[in-house]
Image (cartoon, rainbow, N blue to C red; front, side, top):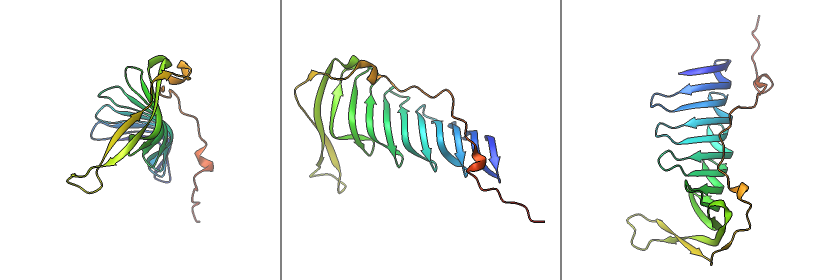
Length: 180
């Protein structure tokens, strides 16, 4: 069920969508898909709040897992987090790049409150005896822990946006004029 703005028979502007499986989306729409700022609550309790492009998570956003309370905050590309922070429920975090939703490459683990930091690198290692070709394991290669040079306030969890910006969709949507 959809409640919201329509233009030329398509969902456009601000609206809410309630899906049969219990999931719901509230935010900006363009040509029947989430586009702009919006929040999607999945039926399993996970929540993504952030930017969408043509129905795909793209831009700045946060994803909170309902099962464990951890949160991915950062830049999203083609539906997956590309770089940012993975903040665990206990306040510890990983900061760096991601590939297929997993940490990859150089980055840092930072303890709650920014007291300690361990720099290192997540490296993909190809499994020799995997059932499928191209299966990899991730291995953490960390340096010695040190005092973190991060201000504790920069490690806060992302807040859900209470209000969405207003958008003048009339300037973004072509309206067909009726012929006489």
